[in-house]
Length: 127
Image (cartoon, rainbow, N blue to C red; front, top):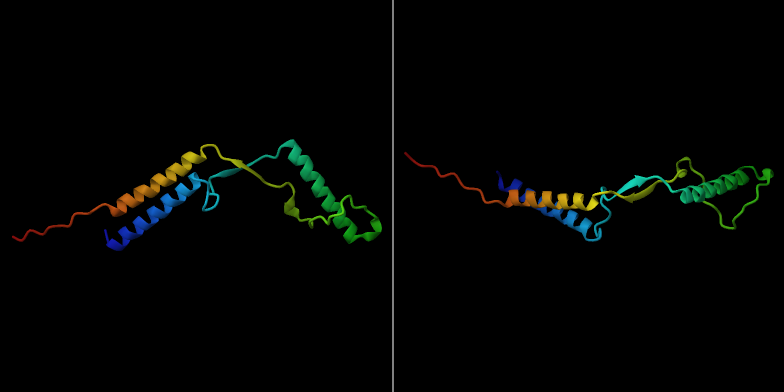
């Protein structure tokens, strides 16, 4: 194996092991993609979000058609309405996320070991 490829494997392995370690020790490199999964909203969250969404609909109707006379329920100006705002997405912890991080660390260490393992040089025996 060429030395440049071996060096690349060692560097990649150290980076992968470091990322897995960071996810296990508090996520100081950010939240990994496997750490959270989408979850359904609780009934309380659904009621709150529906009320906020309806407030934005009423506010947008009042802005677009001032003659309707829709009263605002809040003094704060609600966020503009967009089609992707309801229902919101909630995230919760994924089952086995620490095992996944441990596997990532293991893959990184395996790459590092494979790249750093000493190779024998071929010895040409002259006849």
